[in-house]
Structures are given as C-alpha cells and as structure tokens.
Image 1: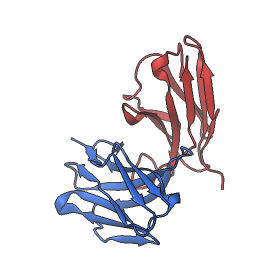
Image 2: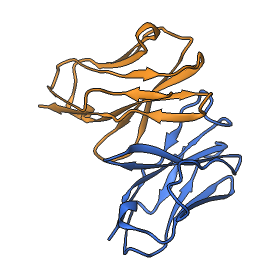
Image 3: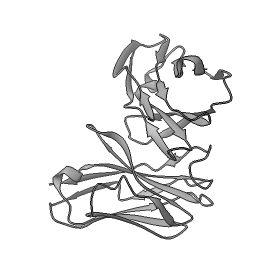
Length: 114
Length: 116
C-alpha cells in the first residue's frame, strides 16, 4: 500500500525557533520519489523539493533542510530560524511508479508567531 | 515564465447548475492533473492526462464529473449537475515528462468552488 503520514496536524512556534515537520511514508517499490509542497494562506501549492529513493543525501536550501532516512521511511523537513512568512500548510507527497500516482499526506499546518 | 493558469479563481453557483473549470498547463508540459482539496479528504487526484489522453480517471467521484483535454494547452473539468458536496478547491497541475516520473508537478492557484 502507498501511504504518507504526517502525524503533526498543527505546530505553533515563535519566530526564530527551529521547527521540524515529520513525514513517514509506506511503499513496496524500490524506486520512488518524495516531495514537499508548501500551501501558504493564499492557497496555491508551491513545490519545495524532490528526492529520489536512491539519494539519501540530506539537502539544505537556505533556512530549509531535509533529512531522508530510508531505514525509518522518513523524509523530515526542518525550518531553521522560522519566520512569520513560513506560516503555511506543508504537504509531504510520495510518487512511486507501481501506483503511478502522487499520494499526499494530510498536511501539517505551521503557525509562526512574532 | 507563465505557470499553470486556472479559471475562474472563485465560483459560486446553485445546486443543479453546470460548472466548468478551466486549466492552461505550462507550455511544453505533457502531463496534466486535476486534484480536489477538501478538509475531510485532503488532496485527491481526480484524473490525469498524458499527451492529451486520459490515463487514469479512477479518482473521478462519479458520472457527474467529466474532464477533457482537447489540445496540449487546455483542459476542462466539468460537473453536471453540481451538488453542495462538490464544494472544494480544485487544482490543476502539469509536469514536463510523461506520467509522473521524477519531475515535480507545478500547480495552478486553484478554483474555489462553492455550490449553494
């Protein structure tokens, strides 16, 4: 079965705090891709990152970093020194060829307060 | 570069009316996807096209929903007749490679549909 679990429904932090959004996935495929999308209050979905199953290197992009661990089937997203503009719903998603569909998690709503 | 363009941004209509949502994918992208987002069910894939051909419509909720892609630069999602439970945000997305493959899907801004 294909499944993406984002156990944290809502997270609230104060500006400048670091915050980690968890994502756990399930798939039987050996080749798959993982994604993170951001949905700000304005409603659009913004692509953040793609990672394939053969690349377990962590990635850093400015204040954003991603930790991919196949051993625990996790693809966690950390925002360092959070800002109010980071307030959004963040979705983790899984694509694997066996199902040929992009499966989204339920999303984590992040609220960053000044 | 222009992103995925959806219209209208908002639609409010009465139950029983026909609703048509429109999407223009990013030029050169040959896969197009329609999603629905609701609080209860999250983001659901309704249908996707490769090279204008519908590949998987298993997510289409019922016969009241239909989607077409007459050419590479235009797609429609139609609901007829509409019902209040169809109220949701409908997203269109496109990607540059056949099927999902490993390329990210780029989403439009969505159409917020309210059926009264």
